[in-house]
Length: 492
Ligand code: NAD
Image (tube, rainbow, N blue to C red):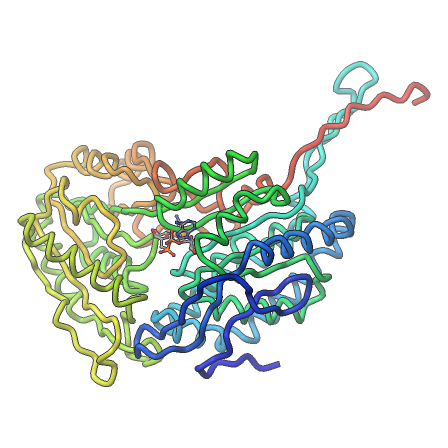
């Protein structure tokens, strides 16, 4: 099959019980190419009845799927991996046209998604629990991991090709069935993912796709046919999802927003650190929960590091995501671009030094696009907006500190705890930061602390609500419940 990569595309559809259906609720919105301003598709929102139907299809399929041998349950995932590899470039092109990031970034995102499919193919080993013979006199005890039913996932706009795959492969491989509610801002790549899923051997009802916005989400959160909910998005919505789904007794994991720091010590390789810093802050237009956009720099190297960062940032090419020379693509909407411009204005008002101003950037041929060039602030006060709030744009702030103690204090005073990076040549400094930084993912001499799929994706404080995270082994525990069998056989 060939995936349709040339817009305008048909309105996106729900996928329920193995069939495509038009969402039947009120409301909807156009899907807009952020680089051209053109309408590329339309999403209608699902009604409560659409959600009911999707959950019912999942519950019906669960009755058979839960007892399907695990070795059979993973076969469609091997097919999915192959299909994703074959169609990766087409998916990446769709992603660029509805999201605005670069083709290379879209390919990288999809690679990360495929890695999760690969890891979930190991569920027959990962699902094993424990057995203790003679745990008590004549008693053997065995723990088994059992699937629970229908799980839902609600995902954000910024990685529409990857984040659904943090959940779906593990949910179904462990024997559950699944309902995905993707972001309404860029739903077409998810539609294409489900077109591929439709080609695999999953029985009808194992995977469902429902489109919508807040009302659709709330229907899923309240639904008594849903056992658990995974959420990725902004902190206020993560908190809402966590509280509302938990209040009806569901398992919940809710990943929220972020504000991530880089610490640069006096022993760091400054050129390397500057390149990694700019790429961490500006890749995907800064629309990443792992973007490190505050850099805490030791005084002795601050001036030299600031010069190098500005030099590297100035070299970035802003443009259309499908143009090969583009480093930074378009932001998701004009409203979001305006909110990032507001933060830049606030940074100036709050007294930070504007070392590089990206606001005047122009992309010939794409005048209607939501473009913003890299912007660098120096001498940022740790108490101000640029230092404390998630910006989600290519804006970077530098904070001068006297010592590593002060740098760690700046990292830990954040209300977020998603990630941080440290650049140093001193193992003692690295050991201290590993122990003391209150973050869920920490990179040393790497720009972005992105864990591979076989490790969970950490996150703390206002960046995460719950206990079991996305990816890896945590997903197996989230999607299963351990029953313990205590057995005595008198004639043994
Ligand atoms: P968002 O919170 O606006 O939307 C996320 C999802 O929630 C969407 O599917 C949306 O339809 C739904 N939603 C929005 N408002 C809702 C409401 N009031 N009630 C119920 N559901 C609602 O987030 P976004 O703008 O799509 O994504 C960007 C955010 O996601 C950033 O804050 C980013 O840091 C965060 N994010 C976090 C991680 C992580 O791993 N921690 C990963 C990616 C993105």
